[in-house]
Every structure is written in C-alpha cells, then in structure tokens.
Length: 182
Ligand SMILES: O=C(O)CCC(=O)C(=O)O
Ligand SMILES: [Fe+2]
Image 1: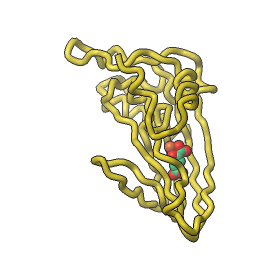
Image 2: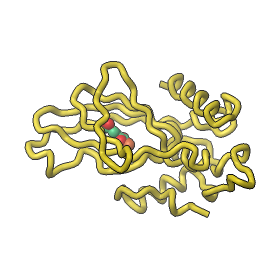
Image 3: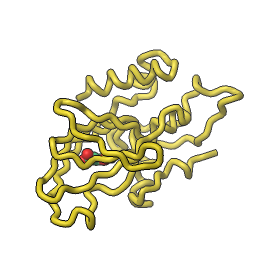
Image 4: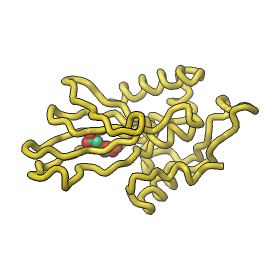
C-alpha cells in the first residue's frame, strides 16, 4: 500500500509541475499512514440510514478498496454519482490537506456511503497524512506553486491541528478548509 501511495504522490507532484519526489520527500505526504476497515450492516430501509455521512477526507491522499456491494458516492457537478465497484480496482480520493498545499490545484472529493438493504458491505482504506503519526510540521501552500498571479489561498496549519479542529467541529458535511482562507 505504501508503494501505491508513493507512486501516486510522484505522479501528482509531476502534475503540479514539481520534481517527482516533492510531495513525498519535501512535504512528507507519504508519512503517517492510517488504516481503517469499515463494515456496513444491511439496513431494511436504506433510505432512512447512511453508512458514512457526506465528508471530505482530511489528509493528503486516500486509497480505498471496496467489495462488490457498492454504495460509495462522490459529488460530481453538484450531483451525487455512484462509484461502482470494479474488481481489483482501487479508488483514490484527494484530501483537504492536498487541496491546501496545492493551493486548490487539486480539490478534495466530497463523498458518502449509502447502505444496502440486503447485503453487508466491507471496505478497507489507507489514509496518507494521518495526523497523529505524521512528523509535526506546518503545512501551507507550496511556495513553488505561488506567484503574483497565484497568491496563497490558505494559511498554514499543522496536520494534527487540522484533525483536531475537524473532529471538534464534527463531520457535518462541511470541511474545515474554508476557515483557513486568507
Ligand atoms: O467505505 C467507503 O467506501 C468510504 C470510507 C470513507 O469515506 C472513509 O473512511 O473516509
Ligand atoms: Fe472518506
């Protein structure tokens, strides 16, 4: 899983016009991997329940594997769109902190999980940029991406503080990110 994350971060660095190792080595984005395994029991009235409420992930990048049941949805053009399970495929989500350091070049993905009426669902998730295990440092928009015409959008924040503020606020569908706007 570390290798997948590192490769993704290399490709994303290049997409930003930076050296391939920038996000991985200069910014430490592959450090602090958090792992989660979700079990969603079936619900006879799925319209009355949500598996995971509307949110964006906090860290840099999330790599997710879902089983055959489905239920993951992402906001695309202001609408909820299914992310259908594809055998062997991994889903990659950009997190809030990658949006922050890329100065909005990458946008964090709003997603949620709806439950199934008959089958349980299992997903496994790796979060790159986990608050408590990352080396403490401040993260702000990457200097090399800034110019007179592209000034910083956000103030700096430590990952741990971003986690703390997000959990304090609660997962209510709103990211903490807009509160860091300059
Ligand atoms: O179970 C899923 O497919 C999504 C899980 C998720 O969004 C998360 O753990 O942040
Ligand atoms: Fe998520």
